[in-house]
Image (cartoon, rainbow, N blue to C red; front, top):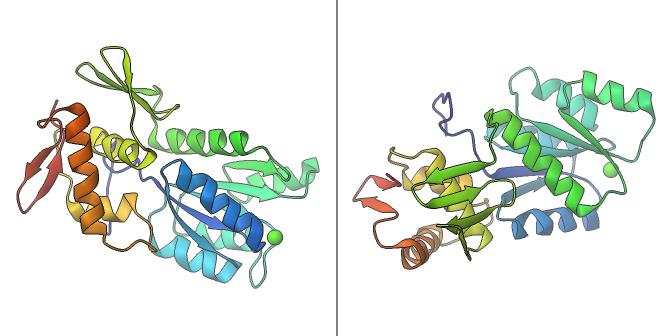
Length: 230
Ligand code: CA
Protein backbone atom coordinates (compact mmCIF):
# COMPACT_ATOMS: atom_id res chain seq x y z
CA UNK A 1 0.00 0.00 0.00
CA UNK A 2 1.26 3.39 -0.86
CA UNK A 3 -0.37 5.30 1.96
CA UNK A 4 1.24 5.61 5.36
CA UNK A 5 0.17 3.07 7.91
CA UNK A 6 0.64 3.00 11.61
CA UNK A 7 -0.15 1.12 14.77
CA UNK A 8 -1.38 -2.39 14.34
CA UNK A 9 -2.96 -1.63 11.03
CA UNK A 10 -1.25 -3.33 8.19
CA UNK A 11 1.79 -4.46 10.07
CA UNK A 12 1.14 -8.06 9.39
CA UNK A 13 2.05 -8.12 5.74
CA UNK A 14 2.54 -11.73 4.93
CA UNK A 15 4.73 -11.05 1.98
CA UNK A 16 8.39 -11.92 1.79
CA UNK A 17 11.29 -11.11 -0.46
CA UNK A 18 14.05 -13.64 -0.91
CA UNK A 19 17.34 -12.38 -2.32
CA UNK A 20 19.55 -15.33 -3.16
CA UNK A 21 21.68 -15.97 -6.24
CA UNK A 22 21.99 -19.75 -5.90
CA UNK A 23 19.12 -20.96 -7.98
CA UNK A 24 18.43 -24.22 -6.15
CA UNK A 25 18.48 -22.61 -2.75
CA UNK A 26 16.32 -19.71 -3.93
CA UNK A 27 13.77 -22.09 -5.32
CA UNK A 28 13.80 -24.23 -2.15
CA UNK A 29 13.26 -21.11 -0.03
CA UNK A 30 10.37 -19.97 -2.22
CA UNK A 31 8.71 -23.37 -1.86
CA UNK A 32 9.29 -23.50 1.88
CA UNK A 33 7.67 -20.13 2.52
CA UNK A 34 4.84 -20.61 0.03
CA UNK A 35 3.93 -23.86 1.75
CA UNK A 36 3.59 -21.84 4.93
CA UNK A 37 1.16 -19.47 3.26
CA UNK A 38 3.44 -16.52 2.59
CA UNK A 39 3.35 -14.64 -0.66
CA UNK A 40 6.92 -14.78 -1.92
CA UNK A 41 8.84 -12.61 -4.36
CA UNK A 42 12.45 -13.30 -5.14
CA UNK A 43 15.49 -11.72 -6.68
CA UNK A 44 18.65 -13.35 -8.02
CA UNK A 45 21.07 -10.47 -7.53
CA UNK A 46 21.59 -7.50 -5.25
CA UNK A 47 20.41 -4.82 -7.67
CA UNK A 48 17.15 -6.55 -8.42
CA UNK A 49 16.75 -7.26 -4.70
CA UNK A 50 17.21 -3.61 -3.77
CA UNK A 51 14.81 -2.52 -6.50
CA UNK A 52 12.08 -4.83 -5.21
CA UNK A 53 12.80 -4.13 -1.55
CA UNK A 54 12.49 -0.38 -2.11
CA UNK A 55 9.44 -0.64 -4.30
CA UNK A 56 7.26 -2.98 -2.24
CA UNK A 57 6.07 -3.41 1.32
CA UNK A 58 7.46 -6.72 2.54
CA UNK A 59 6.96 -8.27 5.97
CA UNK A 60 10.49 -9.46 5.94
CA UNK A 61 13.43 -9.94 3.63
CA UNK A 62 15.64 -13.03 3.61
CA UNK A 63 18.95 -11.78 2.30
CA UNK A 64 22.02 -13.69 1.18
CA UNK A 65 25.30 -11.84 1.74
CA UNK A 66 27.38 -12.97 -1.23
CA UNK A 67 25.45 -11.71 -4.25
CA UNK A 68 26.34 -10.54 -7.74
CA UNK A 69 26.07 -6.84 -8.74
CA UNK A 70 25.46 -5.56 -5.22
CA UNK A 71 26.35 -7.66 -2.20
CA UNK A 72 23.94 -8.21 0.68
CA UNK A 73 25.64 -5.72 2.95
CA UNK A 74 25.58 -2.94 0.34
CA UNK A 75 21.95 -3.71 -0.40
CA UNK A 76 21.10 -3.45 3.28
CA UNK A 77 23.00 -0.20 3.76
CA UNK A 78 21.11 1.41 0.90
CA UNK A 79 17.76 -0.02 1.92
CA UNK A 80 18.13 1.30 5.47
CA UNK A 81 18.21 4.86 4.14
CA UNK A 82 14.53 4.54 3.31
CA UNK A 83 13.04 1.40 4.86
CA UNK A 84 12.92 -0.51 8.12
CA UNK A 85 11.75 -3.81 6.64
CA UNK A 86 12.98 -6.62 8.93
CA UNK A 87 15.94 -8.38 7.35
CA UNK A 88 17.28 -11.84 8.10
CA UNK A 89 20.75 -12.36 6.69
CA UNK A 90 21.69 -15.77 5.38
CA UNK A 91 25.36 -16.36 5.18
CA UNK A 92 27.99 -19.00 4.82
CA UNK A 93 30.27 -16.85 6.93
CA UNK A 94 30.00 -17.76 10.55
CA UNK A 95 32.66 -15.82 12.37
CA UNK A 96 31.67 -13.51 15.18
CA UNK A 97 33.02 -10.35 13.43
CA UNK A 98 30.91 -11.19 10.38
CA UNK A 99 27.77 -11.49 12.47
CA UNK A 100 28.49 -8.27 14.29
CA UNK A 101 29.10 -6.43 11.02
CA UNK A 102 25.89 -7.81 9.57
CA UNK A 103 23.87 -6.69 12.57
CA UNK A 104 25.63 -3.32 12.65
CA UNK A 105 24.64 -2.73 9.05
CA UNK A 106 21.01 -2.95 10.07
CA UNK A 107 20.15 -6.64 9.81
CA UNK A 108 17.63 -7.83 12.37
CA UNK A 109 18.84 -11.40 12.55
CA UNK A 110 21.53 -13.63 11.12
CA UNK A 111 21.38 -17.29 10.16
CA UNK A 112 24.37 -19.32 9.07
CA UNK A 113 24.19 -21.78 6.17
CA UNK A 114 23.47 -24.63 6.24
CA UNK A 115 20.38 -24.13 8.39
CA UNK A 116 17.33 -26.14 9.33
CA UNK A 117 14.11 -25.22 7.58
CA UNK A 118 12.25 -25.14 10.88
CA UNK A 119 14.71 -22.68 12.40
CA UNK A 120 14.49 -20.39 9.39
CA UNK A 121 10.69 -20.36 9.60
CA UNK A 122 10.73 -19.71 13.33
CA UNK A 123 13.16 -16.83 12.96
CA UNK A 124 11.17 -15.18 10.20
CA UNK A 125 7.96 -15.49 12.25
CA UNK A 126 9.76 -13.94 15.21
CA UNK A 127 11.02 -11.06 13.05
CA UNK A 128 7.54 -10.32 11.77
CA UNK A 129 6.05 -10.51 15.26
CA UNK A 130 8.69 -8.21 16.67
CA UNK A 131 8.15 -5.73 13.86
CA UNK A 132 4.41 -5.80 14.56
CA UNK A 133 5.07 -5.32 18.25
CA UNK A 134 2.80 -8.24 19.03
CA UNK A 135 3.76 -9.75 22.33
CA UNK A 136 1.10 -12.40 22.27
CA UNK A 137 0.99 -15.24 19.80
CA UNK A 138 -2.79 -15.41 20.11
CA UNK A 139 -5.59 -13.45 18.49
CA UNK A 140 -9.05 -14.07 19.90
CA UNK A 141 -12.20 -13.54 17.87
CA UNK A 142 -14.93 -14.67 20.23
CA UNK A 143 -14.55 -18.42 20.56
CA UNK A 144 -12.25 -18.53 17.55
CA UNK A 145 -8.58 -18.35 18.46
CA UNK A 146 -5.66 -17.88 16.08
CA UNK A 147 -2.26 -19.07 17.18
CA UNK A 148 0.05 -16.85 15.16
CA UNK A 149 3.16 -18.81 16.12
CA UNK A 150 1.77 -22.14 14.98
CA UNK A 151 -0.48 -20.61 12.30
CA UNK A 152 -3.45 -22.65 13.48
CA UNK A 153 -7.06 -21.80 14.27
CA UNK A 154 -9.34 -23.37 16.84
CA UNK A 155 -12.94 -22.85 17.78
CA UNK A 156 -14.05 -23.42 21.36
CA UNK A 157 -10.78 -25.30 21.81
CA UNK A 158 -11.24 -27.64 18.84
CA UNK A 159 -8.79 -27.29 15.95
CA UNK A 160 -10.29 -26.30 12.59
CA UNK A 161 -8.33 -27.28 9.54
CA UNK A 162 -7.38 -24.37 7.30
CA UNK A 163 -4.94 -24.20 4.41
CA UNK A 164 -1.91 -21.91 4.84
CA UNK A 165 -3.52 -19.36 2.50
CA UNK A 166 -6.82 -19.45 4.37
CA UNK A 167 -4.93 -18.97 7.59
CA UNK A 168 -3.12 -15.97 6.14
CA UNK A 169 -6.40 -14.44 5.01
CA UNK A 170 -8.04 -14.86 8.43
CA UNK A 171 -4.99 -13.49 10.20
CA UNK A 172 -4.85 -10.42 7.98
CA UNK A 173 -8.55 -9.70 8.48
CA UNK A 174 -8.23 -10.39 12.20
CA UNK A 175 -5.42 -7.89 12.59
CA UNK A 176 -7.65 -5.34 10.90
CA UNK A 177 -10.77 -6.42 12.73
CA UNK A 178 -13.57 -3.92 12.63
CA UNK A 179 -12.11 -2.26 9.56
CA UNK A 180 -12.94 -2.81 5.94
CA UNK A 181 -10.05 -4.47 4.16
CA UNK A 182 -10.16 -3.79 0.44
CA UNK A 183 -9.63 -6.48 -2.13
CA UNK A 184 -6.59 -4.56 -3.34
CA UNK A 185 -5.01 -4.75 0.12
CA UNK A 186 -5.61 -8.48 0.17
CA UNK A 187 -4.16 -9.00 -3.29
CA UNK A 188 -1.17 -6.96 -2.38
CA UNK A 189 -0.39 -8.67 0.87
CA UNK A 190 -1.48 -12.23 0.44
CA UNK A 191 -0.55 -13.05 -3.11
CA UNK A 192 2.73 -12.74 -4.91
CA UNK A 193 3.43 -11.18 -8.26
CA UNK A 194 3.42 -14.47 -10.14
CA UNK A 195 -0.18 -15.41 -9.40
CA UNK A 196 -2.99 -14.89 -11.87
CA UNK A 197 -6.75 -14.87 -11.35
CA UNK A 198 -6.38 -13.19 -7.99
CA UNK A 199 -9.95 -12.08 -7.96
CA UNK A 200 -11.15 -15.62 -8.42
CA UNK A 201 -8.76 -17.04 -5.85
CA UNK A 202 -9.85 -14.58 -3.23
CA UNK A 203 -13.53 -15.41 -3.74
CA UNK A 204 -12.78 -19.11 -3.40
CA UNK A 205 -10.85 -18.61 -0.17
CA UNK A 206 -13.55 -16.41 1.35
CA UNK A 207 -16.22 -18.91 0.39
CA UNK A 208 -14.23 -21.76 1.98
CA UNK A 209 -13.79 -19.76 5.17
CA UNK A 210 -17.53 -19.21 5.39
CA UNK A 211 -18.09 -22.94 5.04
CA UNK A 212 -15.70 -23.57 7.89
CA UNK A 213 -16.59 -20.72 10.23
CA UNK A 214 -20.13 -19.77 9.31
CA UNK A 215 -21.46 -17.38 6.70
CA UNK A 216 -21.19 -14.31 8.92
CA UNK A 217 -17.56 -14.86 9.86
CA UNK A 218 -16.28 -12.79 6.95
CA UNK A 219 -18.60 -9.91 6.09
CA UNK A 220 -18.71 -8.60 2.53
CA UNK A 221 -19.16 -4.86 2.04
CA UNK A 222 -20.15 -4.73 -1.56
CA UNK A 223 -17.86 -2.56 -3.65
CA UNK A 224 -15.63 -1.92 -0.64
CA UNK A 225 -14.09 -5.12 0.65
CA UNK A 226 -14.29 -7.53 3.54
CA UNK A 227 -14.19 -7.37 7.29
CA UNK A 228 -14.20 -9.49 10.38
CA UNK A 229 -16.23 -7.76 13.02
CA UNK A 230 -16.38 -10.20 15.94
CA1 CA B 1 25.28 -16.26 -2.67
